[in-house]
Length: 342
Image 1 (cartoon, rainbow, N blue to C red):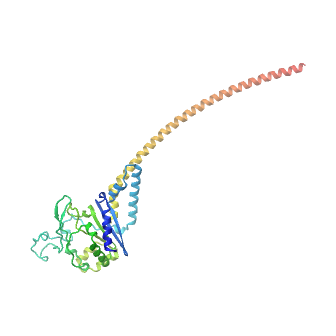
Image 2 (cartoon, rainbow, N blue to C red):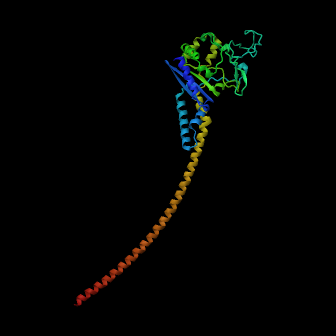
Image 3 (cartoon, rainbow, N blue to C red):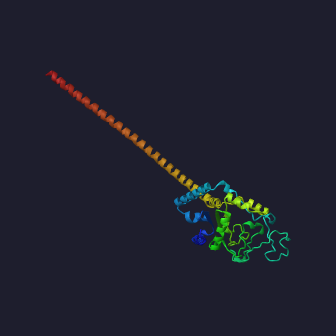
């Protein structure tokens, strides 16, 4: 677990993807003893399009079988306990959110103190770096740490205020230094980092191109309970309790998207093609049966004709044989009569 090598591995993995596959993907890093396992999880719909889908029906059938087998195997590997999600609905009203940012604070117009303002949060850290949206506009990042969600017991102290994206973050050696020290303290077993549309999927700005860097930590149930025992603030502990489930399982989400967007329509097309082929096969069988029936009728007719010819020939041969026998008998009688006279 060398931070320099972890940063280098991240850089190599992110740089090897083709543009077609960069629309949505995430990087998963799992830690085991003194090793880290990197895994790039691609958008399964794009994966299906780029690597498997083909115009030839044989390859198309093979692609469908591979995709269905992947979904089945993945679902069998995921424990039912991992399927319970924690979902934040960003369309809910402000009063129902876990915290509310004072709208005047980022601009410096809020005249009240943190204790006096009726709105919840005046964050100590807020990113004011200029970023570019997908439609080419410049806007402020405005990523901030809500004070109500900061766990002082787990904090390492001051942080440098610097803007990172998820791409630049994992290629930054100090990030891995900090992450490994956090892992010693918190004992999480894996991290996940989203990119593309998966990164901005929960952004309130639909034109966002890249969000301020953030990672997802995954804990075992025992490690999570140990983390919660270190929290003294009851309000913070309540927010941790509602996150006892790890959230949407990315692998199951990938399977659902692949199944809904690509596999079911493809399987339907395959069934229609099979029905069409079956109909053609049935028509061919009908034609063969009709031909066989005609051939059988012709064969029976020919056999009947041959039978009549055979019977006629036998009758003629029998008549000739009888006539010959009669002639032989007459000649024999005459010969015997001549012998008696002598």
